[in-house]
Length: 68
Image 1 (cartoon, one colour):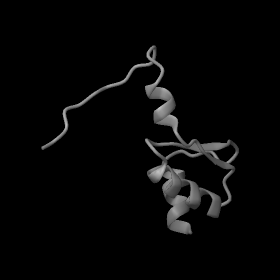
Image 2 (tube, rainbow, N blue to C red):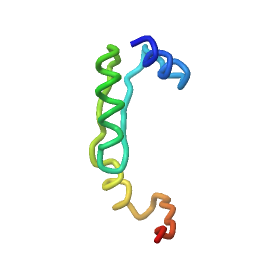
Image 3 (tube, one colour):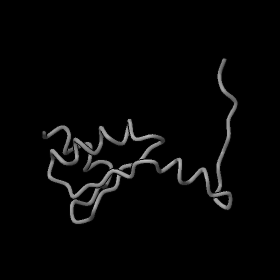
Image 4 (cartoon, helix red, strand yellow):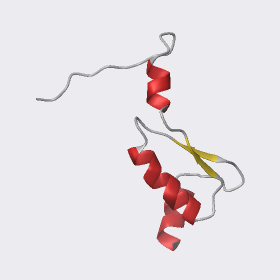
């Protein structure tokens, strides 16, 4: 737990605020969510964030070539 707390502290996560985790489909975000809950943070998982962002044409989106 001490090592995990250090990771959050080094990332400047403020324990007084709500924490929202997000990623493309929730895989990476769910790991951070579970750890944050374990450590006692007030945390939420924003599932589908990329789906929502990608469907709003006024928002920026960077595209890259797939590596073959």
